[in-house]
Amino acid sequence: MTHPHPRTIGGLVLAACLLASPALAADTITIGIPVGLSGANSVVAPSVVQSAELAVEEINAKGGILGKKVKLEVADDGSGAAGAQKAFDSLIFQKKVDVLISMETSAARNAGLPIVARGKTPYIYTSFYEGRSCSPYLFVNAWVPDQQVAPIIDYFMKEKSAKTFFLVGSDYAFGRGMLAFTKSYIEKKGGKVIGDEYAPMDATDWTAIISKIKASNPDALVTSTAGGAPNVTLTKQLRAAGIKAPYGNLAVDEGTAKAMGPDAEGIYISGSYLTNIDSAANKTFLASMDKKFGSNLKTPNDLSVPQYEAVYAYKAAVEKAGSTDAAAVLKALAEVSVDGPRGKITMSKQRHAPLTMYLGQVQADGGIKLLSTFKDVDPGEQCPNLK
View 1 (cartoon, rainbow, N blue to C red):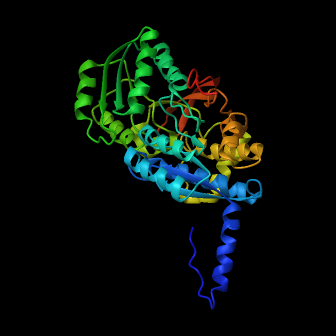
View 2: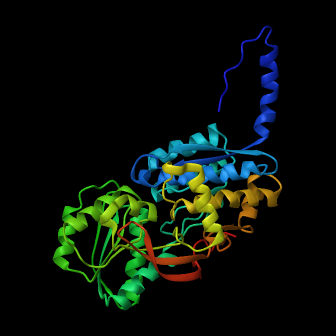
View 3: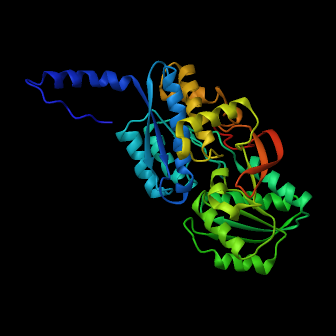
């Protein structure tokens, strides 16, 4: 934030301000949040920013981090590569943030990583994604396919007797990566993929793909589209077409499900956070969110809660390191734990985290009915070459 210089006689106050500025900067820790306020992620981004705002407010109320006040710098990455390059560059080299903590599309993350490396800036990625993104500066506290896919596919095969599957994804790293893993898992379990189709990240017309689904008549449908808007349009058109096959969505969070309205009813989701997790930490978090944002509160979800926890993970790492020095913080990030709404999270498995996963089904009111819980699911081999 910039402040206009006061008018002074002889420049005495101006000189004093200039002398004080470095000290003021040194007393502040700045967290950069590049996020898709526009584009595909615009449906979920506001909830992510809210959770970061609550975390920072709570931390500052208790004295900050190492006695320093924490502030946020939010930049719109447009949910894509070009916007991410501008957002990362601005945050790292102009705003000079101490860390990046963000939920983003894989396209945005991949575009930002070279800039992160150039700036040697710690980066905590808080979005579920297709897995195996590795950088000396990157830590991930959200789920990967190795943790998320099995609950849905196993349920469809056992409870719905599904043998044939149709897959639909957004045509970029997340959509293709998630569904490549899903196809492999289905085939390993003895099922058959009878169709897999992809549309651009910003697709709004799914007519051609829906025609293929109807023609092939699969036992189950699994989709993996860019988080937010594409989930809404695809689901609405699937419902309008009368497709009745059990529907598992690998990319919809609880907040987006609520935004879909009645169209979301019946969708199966698998994730690491649901608002009805019955724990003291989750209830306290939800009450604090409600108190802070009131009627403006966006539904906390599996994309926003990891953001909240990641701010606390950074705090813990800085305190363990005794400074905001990037090398020291990066070492500490693999060693610290956060007890948050999702339980105890430690990014200790090749810079990823074991997570308790939940299988749920969207209800008529947009809430999620919990079907099964899977404790401390390992993320598997993600970045074996990184210590």
